[in-house]
Image (cartoon, rainbow, N blue to C red):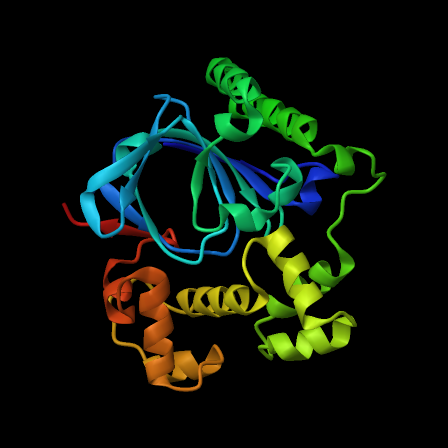
Length: 280
């Protein structure tokens, strides 16, 4: 098994959390449930030029996309085929990090998977071919960084510094805090924009409404507190620490975002926080 990661160089580091590469044997389970993080991902299958995304309600049905796929910002789980994860390269965007590279508001890709060909055209095919041929992870990362810089929308290429709208940047910093769970209303009040204008800006850059993004981050905060042991937890304490009003509210959000209840997640959780194996 080979796992490699790289934090990109500036200016990409403003929008990209990391570049990653994985090569390893087939997993024991055929499918995985991926949980929402509120951010976006570029995934490139280096073995086959295809990626399957399964119907959440009918796992015998799936969509077939090209081997290079943009996973838009999600607020719901989706299901993937683990056989397509044996040699994979990807870009994990920071929240609000996708929109400069697609030439469209991120909200247009909310809960969607789109072939990179549909966004970048022939450049996507050329990129995948080069990445397949590149001999080392380091070389692949260099090629990927160059492609991302080349894909920046014209408006961003004219800037001397890549950055988000200041209101969105401030809101992301506040809503990502785990110490005091600031409310969306409280954050909006300090920005100095109307609720409507702020929500529009946030949706264009992040892809979710501020309230929905805040809920997903609170869900992620809960996941970080659950150990993969299957042991019993003080669920009420975990819920209250994450800012939920009560156990019922907590259970509702957990099932809405993951499709399972907290105890089922704890029993099946692996070292990959947002990957939950599905039994065949």
